[in-house]
Length: 95
Image (tube, rainbow, N blue to C red; front, side, top):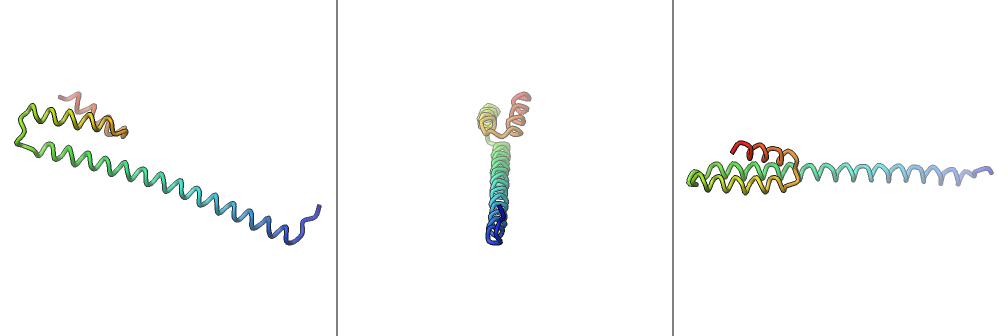
């Protein structure tokens, strides 16, 4: 079976369209991964800021500071961010 010129053009157009669809899909997946990473980084900075604020509260007693630190550690461990969880476990081991 011989393809006509119109069939060849249609087939070529279809291949180009599929390639563009694949590229767009790949780009969307890539952008989603970047957005997810940005979200994780924002969380890390928020936890870091919270921990910094905790240490700046010099009016707390030792017991209050320890309690606040334990609460922060529980939140960090529940964050789902592995590096934060490991850091928190390290803090817990030192107090």
